[in-house]
Image 1 (cartoon, rainbow, N blue to C red):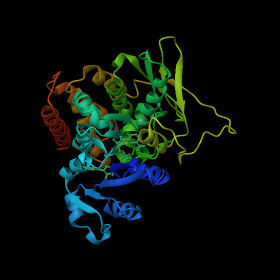
Image 2: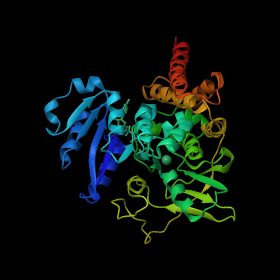
Image 3: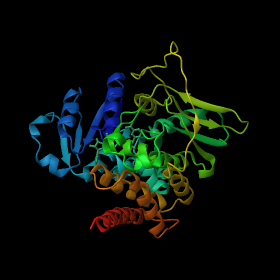
Length: 388
Ligand code: NAD
Ligand code: MG
């Protein structure tokens, strides 16, 4: 029996994970713990559907928990409130696998706790690697934790890498191009929140949807790939593939390129991270070979999408660069979603934070957390300065 803790169970990845777990054999897989932040109705419904009920439920937002009817939780579950409880759930002795599906830097401490406790970590929360890649890797080496990618591109690369023992020559990340793939820079300047959230191939939470529109998501994925697969930034490339069927590719030293294909559905990479090295039938749809497939691959336009250059730069710089850019991005995306800044203000805010921060090559975790706070505050300050 493998006990699973799903952190961020109410989100897009979290609900897809519960769907996968419902289809795996109940005598081998148990949802032992769940966490949610604001949407506690959804969390309580998910907990009520589980048999046996989850042992441990964490509601990380104290205010939402205080306003919520406690009778809605399964009677047998222990419910704890607050961000510290996330760390307790991630490190609980009973837990074998932690699905890290909280969005943004908010997932850092719990993901790190799971790594430190030597769990199998199914990693959706790429921001943790972007903010604190060296800390995660160091703690993984000490604890022996397994870090398995959930991000579809990284799951694809992980699978492709099985084709050869020697290191790859190049990793080619595919990108759908997001909702603004064909938009001009001038059109993007007036992009609405609704348009930015309207992703053509993936249904995702709001933050990553905006990241896909700016292509900051691909920037974060370049950094994620460097940490996960121990490759330099120069060994990573990006190609636009609007159909989201080819999830990424790896080129080996002999020039052979191996790709992983499947219709866009996160349940497949989530399940693979859970069951690896085994494969088992999955609820995601299969490739339909009765359909004609006109798939395209084209180079990414780095001028219209300046986030890409930023991603390569941050991946090469390492140190404090990832924490600062990630924090500036989270703050700027928040402002954009609140209608306070333009879509095209997001990436320049990240670049400015990178350039204005005091770079360090070997920061402590504490320093990274300080810089995360600094960059958020700076982005808010610039906005207030600009609007007053
Ligand atoms: P989402 O917004 O749908 O869900 C986020 C989850 O995090 C929710 O359960 C929410 O309650 C919780 N959460 C939000 N703020 C929190 C806080 N301050 N403290 C604790 N919990 C908090 O997001 P998502 O699309 O499921 O993305 C989750 C992660 O997975 C992100 O890091 C994203 O980049 C990554 N990811 C998502 C997809 C996808 O298809 N959705 C694909 C690849 C990677
Ligand atoms: Mg991805």
